[in-house]
Image (cartoon, rainbow, N blue to C red; front, top):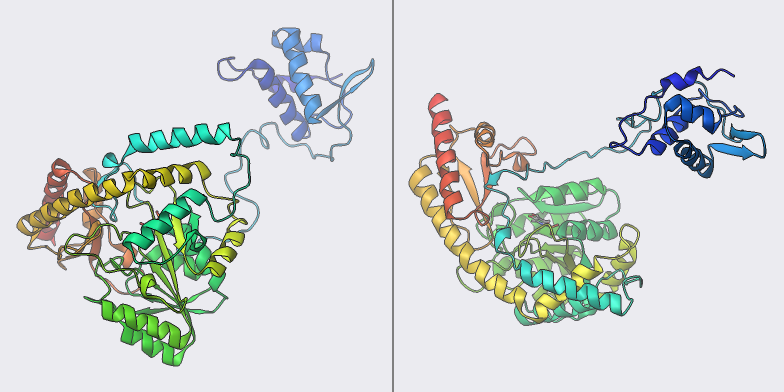
Length: 492
Ligand SMILES: Cc1ncc(COP(=O)(O)O)c(C=O)c1O
């Protein structure tokens, strides 16, 4: 018998992988590469242990694994053989098939047409408008989470299939909060929990859209929502935005010419420009929705942070016709790392979306959702929002003052009434992309503005999140930004 193939096998130090597993993998690869063929007899365990200088039991353990996996079969009194039921494998050189996981797929697949770019998370700086995760009530969350886990284990409920709508406790608490603070007269039946607003947007759009449907968004808009609608086959129609939010006259003009399936609106703080949709326009939107039969997706991503006066109630709170689907999440309250969001809508729609969501996600994160429910019950969320809003207002004012005093000649922005970001316009002599690259080298994230320049429009504007940096970081960030802006502005 020619056992020359054994020379291919090089055993590494046992620290890297137990020797019996190395032997198992090596023989598996010899068979998968067609070097050891169907019905080939395996060398005896004694011979292999001598050849490799390992204990015989090590070889036996490796062979047992290969028999259990079906690569080898044991024939009584004859020894071990390569399973002859394996499909015929054309011999390839050792190491070509199994060891190297393929870096490219051999099958075709759909590629994202409109990819969105994630920023490098290690850079501090002017993000898209995220909260300061350092101030989140982790101790309370951790306690609520541990308590929920213990209770669930005690009652043996973790294995029970939840409904697609998510934790009853959190849905009830959210409904109570929406009734009390956002004027929505709803119950838990109107609430579906998801893994965040993005998932909500996708689920809702999926249930509404047929390929070729017209969807109205603002220009500029929240790009990831646009991409989601496009990926589902929507034809996007864009309307402008002014100081009062979406220009509803432009929407009406579209309605007169085309059938609109739904509109997407970030009512409270328009994304990206931060303006608030006026009450007149909210009411007109509802009237138009009723008249022309379109749905309104209201993405209220950072309702909780409003600094001037009382926030306007959501459009959904004035809806008497069943036109509005209201979306929100905990991403801006605590951190986007906790993936919990919600959809609020008429119960028949919620029920259908719950059924559909089970195709992609059997249920939400039951333990985390219940823990959030407890944080509502013991007022942790309410108190956190109050404290955070106070802090973010200070940060907004401090950021605005610094931007005006240090960069007033190059950068123009109004302080937003609410939310966690400025909408800043840069002077034409400053290239956003250039500045962004230069700041990145200094460890500062500054958006390159590409998110909003997705067609020929060149706005030279970007969102500048201010809430996630403390005073020291803000000063550092402004220093870097000022230095880099001045450098490039002089050069141009
Ligand atoms: C306008 C808007 N909608 C939705 C989302 C998605 O948020 P979530 O983390 O809840 O999925 C974001 C994220 O920042 C956003 O800015």
